[in-house]
Length: 199
Image 1 (tube, rainbow, N blue to C red):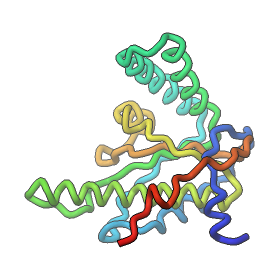
Image 2: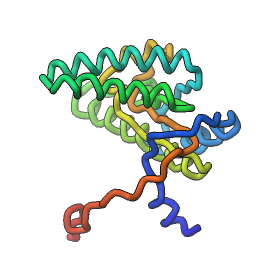
Image 3: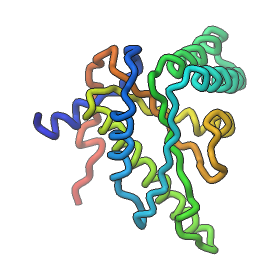
C-alpha cells in the first residue's frame, strides 16, 4: 500500500467488535508510540492501560456523573444532559482496550522565569501529543481502530484515581482501541487556501 494512502486512510473508530486484542499486539503498539519525537528527547509520555470490565465500569460511572454536572451548569436541554453522558459511558464500557496517555514533567528542564517554564511545559505537551498520534498510526497499522478523546483534561482526578496514577503523571488524552465494527467515510478537509501560507 502507498504510505500516503495508508496515512490518509486512518479513521476515528468509535464502535468495536468484542474480540479481545492480544497482549503482543498492544505491546507492539505502545513500543511504536515511544518512537515519536520529543523535546530534548526527554520522552515525557506515560501510558496506563486497562482491559478490565470493572475498571472501565467504575471509570465510566464516575466520569458520567462529572459530565452530567458540567452539562447542567451549561443549562442544556434535559435530553442532552441525559443522553451525552450515557453515550460517553457506553463508549468506555464497550471499548476492548483503553489507553490513557499521560505527561510527566519530572525530567523536563526547570526555569526560574514564567516565560521559559511555560514554553517547556508546552514542549512536553506537544511531545506527548506526538506519541499519541504515533500510537493511533500504530493501531491502524495493526488493523485495529482507535479514537482519541480529551475527556481526561476535564476529569483529571477521576482518571488519576481510576488508573492509580503516580502523582507526577498528568492525564492528557484517552484512546479507545479495538477491532473496528464500522468503516466511516473520510471527513472533509480544509483547503490549502485555509491552512497554508506561502511566503
